[in-house]
Length: 98
Length: 463
Image (cartoon, rainbow over the protein chains, first blue to last red):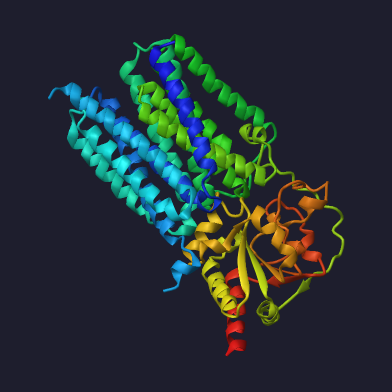
C-alpha cells in the first residue's frame, strides 16, 4: 500500500468522525442551510480543477478541468450566497420587533 | 524565494481552509452563530482558491480565469432562487459537485494512462463511478423536484435485480481496468454504465421520499470528493469531502428514522415502493367540515394553537398567509407555535426555511420530539398540507404501511382542523383516520385562499 494512501486514510477517518460529531450538534432548524453550506465547502474541489486545467497537459484534460472549474466554482458562489440569504431570514421574535 | 516556498504557502492556505471549514460547521449549531460560520467558510474557500492560482503548476491562466467567471455567473442566479425552489437547487448543486469530481478523475485517467498503478486505477475507477452516478441521480432528483419529471415512483418487475446488475457491471469494469488501464474504451464504457446506474437509482423513488434521497446524494457527492482527494493526494479535498459526506450521511439517517425505514432498505434502492395498500373496504365514514367563519371563530377563541405545516403548504405558496394568521392570532394573545416533522417538505429543514422566509420567528418553530407533549394542552391543532406525518394509524394500526413511523400527535389536541383540497389519500395512498375523528374539522379548499379567508374573518370580527 502506498504511504500516501495510508496517511490519507488517517485524515479521512479523523475528518469523518469529526464531521459526525459536528453535524450531530447542528440544530435541525438549520438542516437546509447545513446542506447548502456543506455543498459550498465541498466545492473546494475547484482547487484541483484549477490545477488540472492550468497544467495544460493534454487538450482533453484541459477541457475537462475547465468544465470542472466552472461547475465547482458555481457551487461555491451559489452555495455561500444562498446559505447567507437563508440564515439572514432566521430571526427571533425579539429581534423582529423594532 | 523559490517555488518550494510558494508550495509551502499554498499548503498553509489549505490548512487554514480546513480549520475554517471545521469552524463553519461548528458554528452552525445555533442560528445565533451560524452567520459567523458562513463568513469563515467563505474566507477559508477564498484563501484556498487564491493561493491555488499561484501554484507553479498553473501555467495557463486565461481559460482558468474565464471558467471561474462563467462559474460565478452561473452560481449567482443559482444562489438567488426563491426559497420554494431550494430543494431542486440543492439537487442541482449535488449534480455539479459530483460532476466536477468525476471530470477531474476522468482527466487524471487520460493524463496518466497507460502508466497508472493498479492502486491508482482502483481509486480513480471508484471515484469516477460514484461521481458519475451521483451526477445523473441528482439531475433526476432535481427534475422530479422541479416537476419536469413525474413525482410518482416509476417501477417495474425485477427492477432491483436489473439495477444491481448495472452497478455490478460498473464495478467489474473497474476490476478489468485495474489490470489493463490502457483499455481506454473500457474506461469510457465504465463512465456510461455509471451514468445509467444513477438514473436507475433515483427514477423509482417518489417525491415524498426526496428528503432521504437528496441527503443520500449529498453524502455520495461528498464522498466522491474525498475519494478524489485520495486520487490526487490532496488532504484538503479529503477533509472537505468527508465532512460533506458525513453531513449527508447523518441527514439521511435522520430522514430514515423519521420515516421508520431501515438504512439498508435505502442503500439498496428498494424504497419509494411503499405498497399502496388496496385499502380495507372503504366504509362510509362521515367527516365534519367547517367554513372559514367557523374556523376563525374557534381559532380566535383558543388560547393555544399549534400549526402543522407540510409539503401542501409549500405547493400552495401559503406560507405568507400563514404568517398573517400567526400575526392575527398572536395579536389576540393566542399562543401560536409551529410543529415541524423532520420529513415535512422535500428536503431536511425545508419547512423551517419557508416559514423563516415568511418572517415567522424561529423560536416558534418546534421539532417533533419537543412539541408532541404539548398537544394535549392545545386547543386547536391546525394541519396545513401535511398528511402522513399526522396519521395516528402510524401509532395504532399494526397493519398500516406506515406503522411505527414517528408522527406529530395532533389527534391529542382538543380540536383538530385540517386544510385539504379534497378527501384524496396522501402520497403513500394511505387512509388517514384523523379525518374521521369527532374532534376533527375538515377545511376544504386551497391552503392559501382558505388561510386568507380565516385571516379576513379574524380581522373583521376584531374591528
